[in-house]
Amino acid sequence: MKTVHEEILSRALALRDEAAQVLSTLVRIPSPCGSEEKVCRRIGSLCREAGFDEVRIDGLGSVVARIGNGPRKLAFDAHVDTVGVGDPSQWKTDPFSGTVAEGMVHGRGTSDQKGGAAAMITAGRILKGIGWEGPWSLYFTFTVLEEDCDGLCWRYLVEKEGLKPDLAVSTEPTSCRLYRGQRGRMEMEATVRGLSAHGSAPERGRSAAYMAARVALAVEKLNGGLPADAFLGKGTVTVSRIDVRGPSLCAVPDQGSIYMDRRVIPGETAESALEEVRRAGGADLADVRMPRYEGRGWNGASYIQDLFFPAWTTAADHPLARAGVEGHRLLFGAAPTVDKWTFSTNCVALCGVHGVPCIGFGPGDEEQAHAPNEHTRVEDLWRCAAFYAMLPVALEGGE
Image (cartoon, rainbow, N blue to C red; front, top):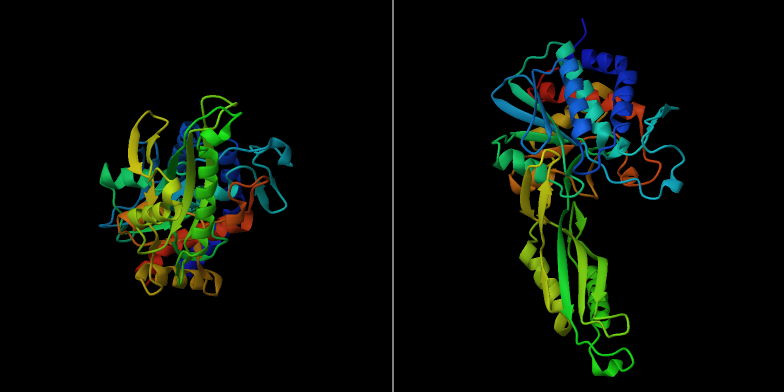
């Protein structure tokens, strides 16, 4: 008789091609941030076909599917919105073809991160197929608006709908490694105020362009001295946009703004990061603030939050991390590589804000995110599906 992990592995391998076709189906449905309705509707249908116990759409437009009815809650999350295509001439194939060829699925969102969604649906089919019954309610969430505001979807689920899991797994791409943390991030906007004068006599004014340039160079210098975390790495700050304006193109500009992306490590706060920029900008700086974001779902609902996303880590010896390592060992004969993300994920809300221990394990490569000719490996899909199905078993110390 097969052990549980042998049965899971066998079923995952048998569903290899189906997982690739599910991903292909999802890629063929464009789902830019805020316009995810069609892909969410299709995901809901696929979850019902796979036998999930409950499938619903939350108030913001995310799909929430459940297997089991135990007292503890374990969530698996994939965001289903994507960034745009960018320059179409850089793509070798149609970004929405979903082509499956030579062990790869091609198209926008294959790694970031519809591949995780396809593996989650396949994991649900595996769990229903083996008749899994355990002390968990397993929530599979296919979330919206992540590309514009990571974590907003989960802040909504926890704060508005009361769905706070005990543990969670992000299926963002990890190259089938086990991740247990990431730096946080925030957005900042600085303003400068000059004095306009006719362009023929610039000495009569104070140019907001030159002030903005000096602030940008001060930010570059600030970046070099930011502290580092032993596991997550160094905090960073970079200027992502500069805009200056004046009364005409024949005038000294009197208004300017500098937008910044700041990556934060544990212990750093929004106010401490803002104060660093205030000091760096000196007399050229009029103000620096953290913007707010209002996310509007495809169903018209909205939610607002500050653009600050805390860093988070889950200890290597936490039961969730240990179960992930043990489940991987049982399935694949070796412990996984343990690492962290460079970019940000929905765990900034789950773990960073609400203290839910998280790990990451997902198909595809982080380097594929937002890149032309995005693709993911079919091999990753079935392996991740097996890992997700195995995790609740490993959490109970089962075989």
